[in-house]
Length: 133
Image 1 (cartoon, one colour):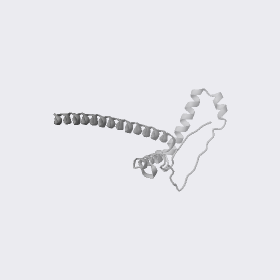
Image 2 (cartoon, one colour):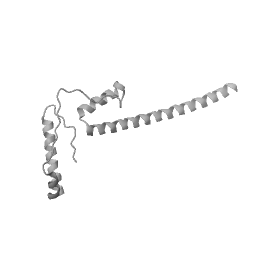
Image 3 (tube, helix red, strand yellow):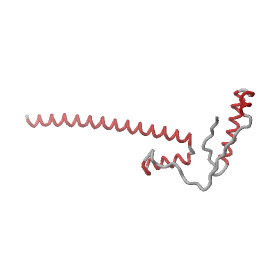
Image 4 (cartoon, one colour):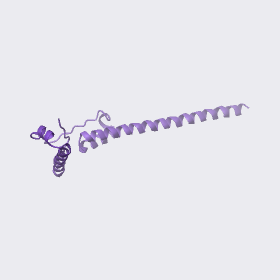
């Protein structure tokens, strides 16, 4: 009877342990899934703001946990030459009032697409951001 009682108690304990272990595995999976989803979202946001040539090496370092992980890994890199282009469209305020909205949007789209194409054609030239007032 004692042996049977020990077997029942051990069996119940093993069953509870197995259920707890399975629950912990599910919770760990969900935590890893959420973390990966947040990292992917963060990567997409960064890709909207920075060139892929900066974002991808940054995330490779983060995945290997180099330089302190996701938030502490440096993004900057040294380059031998850099430049910034500031551009203004002459009398843009007049264009906004005299052109139809759709025509203005088409004009801006052609202009910025042309600039993007020039950046792609140039070796080493990277467009980081286009902003307006």
